[in-house]
Length: 445
Figure 1 (spheres, one colour):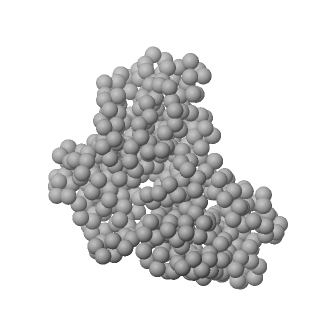
Figure 2: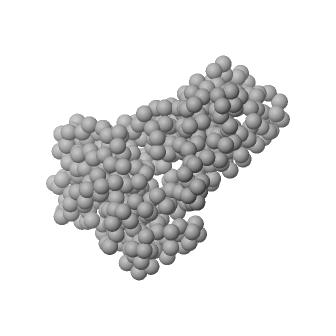
Figure 3: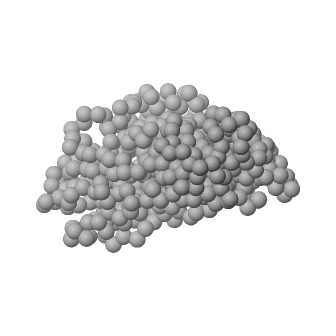
């Protein structure tokens, strides 16, 4: 846990919700490609071609920044990147293709096939700049031998509903792909690949960002099978047969096709949380960064952090108010598998699930506000980043005819917060450093 370097004056904010939104906006701004990417772009090749490729929710904006950077140097650029629908950015020479996330579609399949062709037959004089960000696991869809798009869609749906962590999900996905787990970089051989990452995963391990298409993978098919068994995930027969055969192994450390490649993380959750902390300090609020890699069930996380916030608000322990508790990472939501419960599901995402659980557990605790949102602007399947929790949220919900606990049980966080006007809507932010959570405590013990 990060200890603040300064002690702000104990003056509570006059508009807690506005302060929380300012912190979230600062976190997103810190991860914008225009700010973080240019210092890390490699030099252009002396003789060969410069090819920009990529996949992820931030990849189009990254490509636009990279293209402008090289154009100012008079360097010709070409390439193709794949991003989520609505997350495109105009480029002149790098083609931008939009496809589906979090479940892949045919547009992503066709784009991935075209990307494979673009990097086939490169020379040792060529340089590839790979721009990789969160969301690439679904967008860079290239079923391994013997598998189909339907198989991959079934895999993604099952993993998303299982409660598995992002690292566990990506472990499975990169063993079922013709491009992930280092395979894309291997196709570029003998060209040199420079991978630039915007991290959306706890721990910032490159192999887990978009399932690591350009980095070596030390995990195995046996590890993938163990993950499926742990969460009792049922997948199509063709998928299971491919994993059991061992033929779906990824590119391993030491592979000569990856020799000389570089990999740099240009933006990560930690830096975004620090940017939010600076906004809090400027407002006279002590920030505490609990961690940038919190994982686990969103509902359980909400209950746990509610206890911490309540103890702080009532007793000044373990923190003194006014303060804000900041955290990042990626929580999970396990959905019901029986048909009756599945048919009764609402509209949700992991951030609003966390926030609604926090609100139910706090039960209108005075002096506690919170914001939880995804830094890419999309929580779950909808273009809603997250929501804000006020001390009177539950009171207003009951007045509107909503039962907070029932909404939580139905995983209807978006329905709940949208009905009372507390959703946070940003539109596509064109970056992605995972979840942002801030609990602001203004009450004095």
